Structures are given as C-alpha cells and as structure tokens.
Image 1: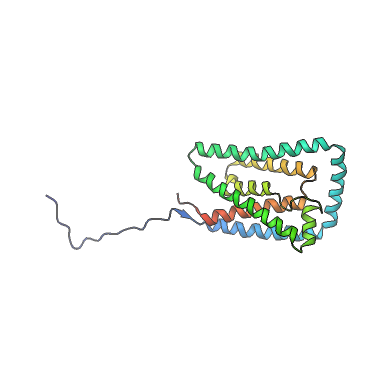
Image 2: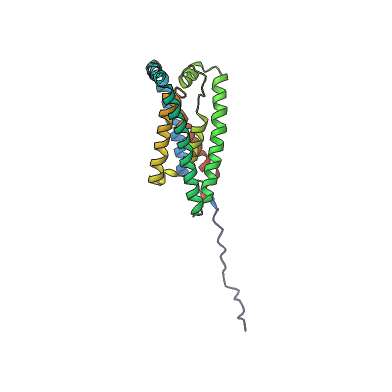
Length: 213
C-alpha cells in the first residue's frame, strides 16, 4: 500500500541548463582579432611604398615562369579545399556533425561577408586602402575562398587538434604563396583576409553558442 506524502516534504525542481552556451572567450578573441586587423591595416598603409616594391619584384619573377605560377595556384586552391573536406568527413564519422554544421555556417557568412566588403572597398572612396589590398590590379580586395576557409577552420576549433591545425595552416600558407607568386593576391590582402576570416569564425561561435557538454 502506498505511503501518503507528508505535507512537510519539500520538492526542488532544478531548471534545465541551456543546450548551448555563449563563451566570453570567443567574444574576447573576436575583439582581439579586430584590434589586430586595425593595427595591420594602419602599419601596411605606412609601409605602402615598401610593399609596392616587393610586388614589383614578384611581378618580374612571375613573368619568367608563368606556367609554374598557374600550376602552383591551382594546386594551392585544391589543397585548401581538400583539408577542410577531410576534416568534415572525419568529424561526421565520429558523430560530431554539429561542429561541421557550425563551420559551414561560418564559411557561408565568410564568403558573403568578404564579397560584400570587397565590393564596398572597390566602389567606395577608400582609394589608398583599395590600392593596398589589390595592388591597383583587377583582383579581389579580400580573397573570398580564403576568408571562408579560415572562418570554417576557426568555427570548428581546428586549433585544438594539432595534426589538423598543422595541415590546415600549411595548406593556407601554400595557397597564399601560390597566389602571391601568381600576382592574384597581395601580402596585405592575404593578412587582412585571414584576420577577417578568423573574426567571422569567432563571431559565429559566439553568435550560435557552443554545445553545453
């Protein structure tokens, strides 16, 4: 026979924890990246003449081996896509598809954001900044593909996995080197692109939150 409940019993209902948390560390990294981005742009504007001279030297070298420059650019573009795809497959295999989804969101935002920012720079009145990022050539001020890849790598927290981190940043460095030698990107543009991608990745992490595990 069931025992009657005592009127003096106290029942405590614990609130459910939120499924996702916004980590202050991601917000701090976002603002730190913006600070570094502003510092890089200011320093690059000061050292503009030196960078223009370096671009001229690269132009002379690229004209000597145009086919090699094109091949290097193609291989760099392929490699910078293969590593994120391989990481996504590995995470899905380990039932961590949610992390991949976060990375894809960051990549899409990064691609759209870099395109819109580039259009604003091209059509705006920021002549010195546009020349700095494009070398006064008909190229993107910010590399759309590179921005999305860096945003993806940041959002999936690839930095916490040493092997994947090494592979990712090695391919990014090779991609930048290949495109720089082919005069399809400038040094300031490469640095700004990477920083913008990181900022978008951290903003995505903070915006959608991290799993509460």
